[in-house]
Image 1: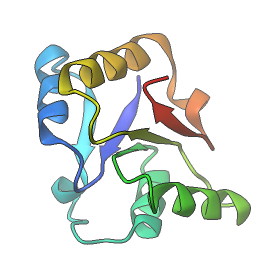
Image 2: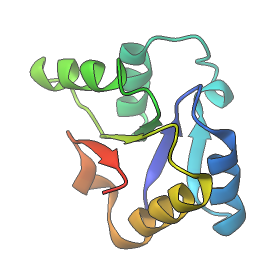
Image 3: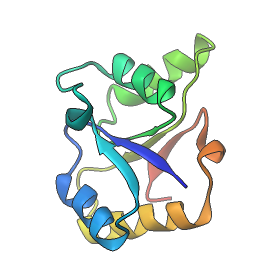
Length: 116
């Protein structure tokens, strides 16, 4: 099962759609765990400590923070980057496919731009 942490500005309609399609989908939002307003480096640290892949639209700073963790030899559970312009329906389908066809450990240390 994939465990995700949706970035603070990630499209809430995608999160809701995932939960409606698959109620046991393991996704939490940054604001749900008390990390609103926190920088990407700290969010990725929390994600690593809690074994969650970061789900983000932030193509500017999230990848940089992820690569910095990798270069420093720190754990980095993975980052999924979706364009903010990617339609909600196809984004939900993409994430459901990832959930159905992969394991958490396959994404360790990767920054993946979606759709694939």
